[in-house]
Amino acid sequence: MGFETCGPNEVMVVSGCCHSESVFIPGGRVFVWPGIQKLQRLSLNTMTLTIDSMNVYTQLGVAISVTGIAQVKVQGSNDKLLKAACELFLGKSEREIQKVAQETLEGHQRAIMGCMTVEEIYKDRKKFSKAVFEVASSDLVNMGIYVVSYTLKDIRDEEGYLLALGKARTEQVKRDARMGEAEAMKDSGIKVM
Image (cartoon, rainbow, N blue to C red; front, side, top):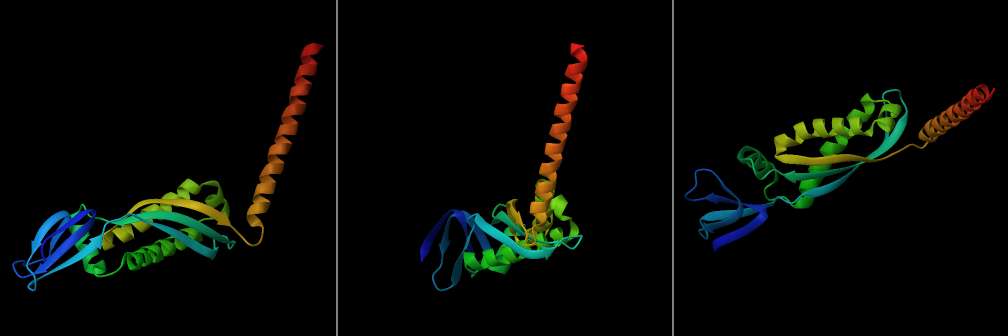
């Protein structure tokens, strides 16, 4: 072995002789004694996850499906969080780390869906996204994973509930427009006389 290096998107973990605890080197170089020290690596790359929750019953019992997009990464800048991530994920592939983060996010996404109505999720996507982001962040941080972002990508249902919401809103806008036009014509007629 000898000198080992890694870029800023990776952390090296050295354990064994000469170290009472593992040494974390996020980006840089380290000397490793062959045979008496062990070197492992953990990716610090940002991972994009698609979070699908299919046919989840919302607060009032309407089943909808939601797709969210999350960006997560192992926290490399905080020693305590990096240690937690290494304890859980060292030796695991990036795909295995993604699976843990994805399942955690999906569970939180489903829980938030169950606490809100379809109308709340549909009309206030920002509120829904913020709720999922906050709950998932507080849970994943204990694993050393940082949620960079979460966005609600799509809402759909099998029963046409969202389509009916859209049609009702469209009809209301059309009705309001017709009433406004009639009111304007009435007002213009009064002024002419």
